[in-house]
Image (cartoon, rainbow, N blue to C red; front, side, top):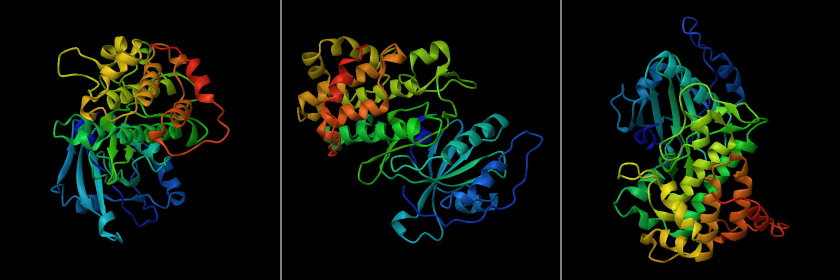
Length: 363
């Protein structure tokens, strides 16, 4: 998904409403009736008509805050919101076409399953036409990618402790997708710094579920377009087409390396990939890690935490998916060995993180 599609989304309340009758699309074979059936159970999601979408976007003349090959995102102010500070929302209008509408319905189906404080919240939708529409909370501080790589000095606002907190919270969101939102897991499929938005307190929210895959319990061969972004996509998936939780773990490992080094997943120089650059440095352990840490931090970081996080990142991006840690294991290691990431103390862990760490193989 293009980065421009991802700079949107914030917190707002939305009045619920009863589902309206909606036209069917038998000629396209697209069925969304199950979505309407679920709406009474999801009080915070509203179903909009096309005229309402036109009103929200001022007939598509509202401020554009994101645009790419598949959608345009408009900033809007919701009517009836009780607090002015929470009345902004993002209206993501997909391009028309049967394939894109199917992708929209797939993304909508996933979003309706999710409710987590570190995942961008779905407020409403419209599928009256081929141009499927999502109404999402607006997240005001842009993306993690912008903060780290814009060159505008924004990275200075992200000190070591803040970066570790972001990593821990994103890991929690991904753990929720894998193990906490139903009987079968959801694989996000495109975890990147561009798909992590930052709210007013610089806390992260995971967004963009256009590549998500739901409803399987083990690795499966993915149908449809290739998922993932350059520099983040799991090489095992690219070789085999097999998608599993470890596909997300690999991408999360790349995100960790970005937070540690301050470097983008793919450099401006042709062919430069962060994971390839970091391999020899991480094998050197102490000295290699110290040389790799983002110099913009000015040495203001804990060397032991940096070593622990580099080791976790290395194992996440290992070649063998079966040897990668789970998101739950990653969070446990962070709680025990990276205090900056979380103030939570887990009673009775008894050094489990050290045992998990020693059982994993560096890439």
